[in-house]
Image (tube, rainbow, N blue to C red; front, side):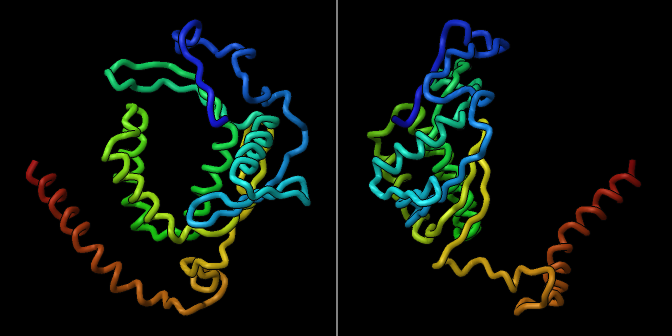
Length: 230
């Protein structure tokens, strides 16, 4: 349901374009509908819990939600990739992959995180947890203690990922139309505004800039002195 991969044969030559009839899960983007299709995905603690589509329809059951996301993406040719990757044993391998529904769900999820997830938590997660979690899964170590540890870290990072994302699919592309959250307080329109003065005082940045400049100024002075010595 989630994914299909294709390797070997003509694909072993990375310069060759995948045959049109290779793809089995998604329609050729060039033959996709001429009208974009919109949907809205709701998340609670990072998990998709509701998908609204076709103006007045919605699904909440996890299986129905996943199958609906698949159907929307498939008929618009969304979710194809053609990559050269690195196998566990060290060889490079070319593969073509179709992951329609998960492409929509993951892309919407990542976008929502930008609105509701603390930047330092997201940075730590993406620098260490995400990279190692994907490597563990890719190398077939799902039933390992490190996978359990990393997954618990991911779950912990998702406590505040609540909200909804409006999306559009069209001829192989996926576009975010908007996002919102009723629970997150990290984004403040007034504080972030460039059109009005909110609670944030721009003059407060002068001291911050001076402190941050200390290291850069010393580095510039060092480069200047080194240049003069040469």
